[in-house]
Length: 236
Ligand code: TMP
Ligand code: ASP
Image (tube, rainbow, N blue to C red):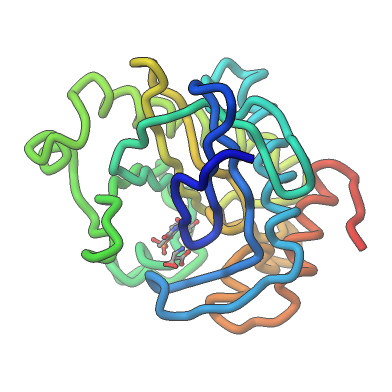
């Protein structure tokens, strides 16, 4: 393993022998509310590594360019080196979390159209909501990149929502990050129960990080259930 380049709240990123590729290591550490709440979700690193790999492969089949290269171990994946844009793209289908609070709608209301939100990726500021004008004025992305990441967001939302319906999971909302690899815009980061809200289509049971954020219990079980529904793999 090469030098550690970066340690985030849930992952570590290492250099590899190939200057074009990074190794991502998924930790069990869990945080919420911008790091104020801290804990551990047993085997989360393994589960999120596998779940993310599954989603990246699914998206590749639908023509979405992304950074994932291959799984290296239970907790590690090889990815293409990205210069990450300091923007988080959140896609929403049903009100929950911060949107429910911001607009005063109860959680669980279907939005008539999918909603795209942009956040400035900056921990010191608590990742504030911004719009395209802010992003452009702040030099976070070009017009063309802003258009592309929002279009990708909508397309990814359609692909994942449709797929998950078949697995009896409702895709409530999720967060995406994009970056540049030799000038090419690629989807990066992870797609997992840490970064998505999944509700069981029949019971409405939450199968994502809200179980940790809100102390609902059965956190590991929820992540395992998501992996099982996607891949059929049962983790001990
Ligand atoms: P929110 O309702 O708290 O704004 O979250 C919207 C979605 O974004 C939800 O699926 C969780 C995900 N998310 C992250 O991946 N990272 C974060 O730091 C936050 C706040 C949300
Ligand atoms: N990952 C974020 C944090 O710790 C927030 C969240 O997922 O709720 O701050």
